[in-house]
Image (cartoon, rainbow over all chains, first blue to last red):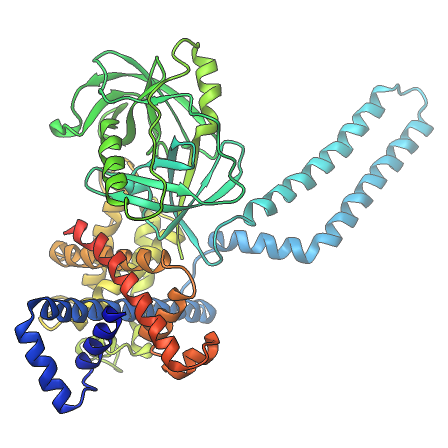
Length: 370
Length: 188
């Protein structure tokens, strides 16, 4: 309560609404108590930061409006590519009925035509009928495809959010904690998608651009925690020549890639990471790099541009330091601590089984701005 | 230049957030940047993103006290966009050998560094605000960002009087400050 009174006084002091006598008293207090002086400085800095933030938001708004206005006037043009999503929804909503009528009419005509065909040319055999059912199926499939498109658009992204980057992330705790690269999370928020296409909202728990790692937490009621994680997080970084593999989302679908550990340090002798020989693509960032025993030895992060297949992975021990830091710092809050998996349950499985068990733990991460 | 405004006036207008001026600068430079980005593996979305980022950088520069623009606005905006786009391409891990575009450029690295630092600060603020939860977030946004009157705010949130709302606001502010400085000091 006292703190609040103090802040109240500071705020009044800063915006100049104090009475002269009160002001003199406060200034004396500032002079005599360094803590209060520090609070005043800190608060005025914070208020300035808030002001700047407000200003930036306003300017962004103004830019957005100018853009819209100029688009309407036709002074600038963005082709049509950018509006396809919106247009599809609009067109679909508008022509939903018409489309389904058209489809059923088409179906009916197809049936009638072939029935007539069958009737007027009895010589033709049964295979023609089969052909017909296929046709109808094709129509049905087409409709389904349109349907799925709509489902895709109706996602958990907040309204007006724009996707800006995507990558991969993997569970480090069944409670819904994921690790990914900091550079994947360039926007103001993120959602994660599992290998079945189900989306979950997630928040950024900790982000460290220096080691390029971030921890996300799924906070979505649809999320069903797994019983355990099949892999473990290794504290050692692996041996040269060791065979490794990764799972990631360079496409909207999970993709498996394998390679080997080719150097103990990363780009330019960077000791935080290791070099691996593996073909990687944008979207692989943040994926787990595992050895054949099913231990995560790294997080795939970058690749060298002018060389083929040279990829770098951040050593997994950095996850430990990030998590420890978080666990220690957060002790006052009620948040539960992250427990990293220490035992791999897939050490003796063959690769197909390993991948199958891991698939559910590797997520597509989509970062957006709103 | 257009007869209506000269460059200095445009920058002054920009610094004071004049919508008409923003529109003029926007109109005169957007197409150039868009075609540059489209020609270099970008999409329409990328173009808009990068261009608006450059506009923000120009705006912030125009507002700063030590402001001197030694080149034409268009050259400056183009240089920023070029630099930003190169960076973005590198981050995506694309092969960047030669980036096309023959317009004249100026050195913008220092400005961009400042700009990025500010961006990071704002990102911290945004994250702090977002993790605050309601009604704290809206209350603080209403008071500090939209500069609404405490009386009105109290009414719209359903507080019985302005004093209660004010109390709540201070509590929220203390929490926000804690969240903000926790992140901010790590970044230092």
